[in-house]
Image (cartoon, rainbow, N blue to C red):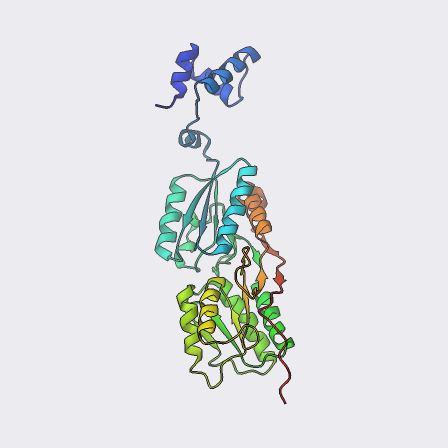
Length: 334
C-alpha cells in the first residue's frame, strides 16, 4: 500500500498539519524539521493525493485535452506537442479521443468538469448546441477548429483556413490546372467550412461553376478511395484534386494508382496537414501545414494562465505550404 500523509506523520512523530505545511512549503518551522520531513517523504516514497489537494485548493494540476481523431497524424503530433508544453509547465494531461462524436464529447466534457481539471484544450467536431451552456466556458481553449457559437466569450488558437484554402486553390490555377475538384468531409465543422470557402472564393474569381465539383465523405481512407471512383461519372476526369483532410488523401492515392493515373502527370493533389515523416508516400503531397508546436504552446499558455484568456483572444497563427512533387505545371491547351 502507498504511504499516506497520516503514515508519514506517525513515522515522524509529528502532527499531520505540520507535515502538510512542510510538504507544501507553507507556515513557519525550523529548516531542520522541514528537511527531516522532506527526507522521510522521499525515503517512504510518499506521493501526494492530487484529488484531495484539488478539493482543498479548488484546482488540479491536470489539463483535459479533447481531440477528434488520434489516428490522424496531425492530431497525434498536436497531442505530443501539448503534452510537452504541459510537462514543462508542471502540469499533467488527461486525454480524451472523441471520434468526432457529439455524445462522446459531451460525456468527456462532463467527466473533466467533475475531475476539477485546471482547464481544457478542445478541438470540437462541430458547434453543437450544448457548448452554449455556461459550464462549458470554464477555462476552455478551443484549438484547430473554431466553434461557431452565438456567444463570443471564448478563446481560440488556429490558422486562417479561408486564406489557406484560397492560396492552395490559387496555386492550382497558377500551374495551369483547369478541371479542379474539391474533396471535403461530412462533419460540418468550421475548419472544413472555411477551407471550402477559400476554395469557392478562388473558383468564383476564375468564373468556374463549382456545381458537381465538390465531393464529400467521411474523413477516412476508404471514403477517399470511393470518392475518386465517383469522379469517374464526371464528363472528364479532373486534372487536380483539392483535399480538405490528410486521411482522405491515402485513399485518393490508392484509387488513382488502381486507375493507373499518375501523380502529378495526370492528376495533381494538394491537401492540408499531410505529414509523412517517413517519406514513404511518393510523390510527397503539396500541403498547407499548421505550426503544431506554436498551436500547442499558445493553447497551453492560455489554459494555465486564465488571466491571459479573460479577454477571450482569437490567436491566428501563420501557416506554411510544403511544396511536394504532387503538384506540377500543366502544359497550355491549344
